Image (cartoon, rainbow, N blue to C red):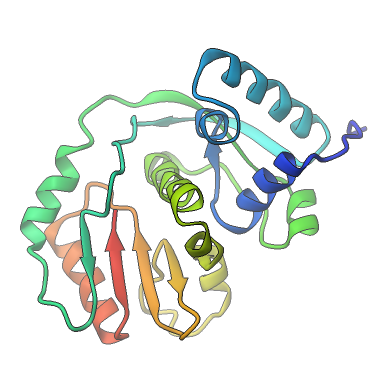
Length: 215
């Protein structure tokens, strides 16, 4: 039987982020954003996440992921009126930042109970090839949440974009920001992307007259 747990405001924010914005978060990300980056904050976060897991709000797992780069700003920002970026240079920059070996990384993701309470979808543990990417995208969202909260509120997750079912043959970005005026900006966390993949992403956005940020 699940353990009864009364949700705090912090609990609710974590669960809503996981159910509606990102697929998963590392325990370290949760601790650094909602507690503190130090050892005590990490211990307190772990204790609370274990309680939320026992209560059926979360699932926990561990994945192999590379350490994330520090995300100061996007590597590329493009709008329909701008010149085309240099994709060879961008590809090199993306591949050069993932040089550390993978490490065992504890994560949490939303259970069905959280999705029912806050909307969105239950999360899942990322597949091995997705782990670093998914945690990198989560880090982008947390940066928005900390520095540009109004923009974070307009973040539309990939799962929500896919639910529309239109233009299925075209690429669905990692996330999208839609302004009040309806202008769309695709948000993409770049893994070890080739020049070809970056070009295809750009061409899809250009065809839709949609800007993008590549992190």
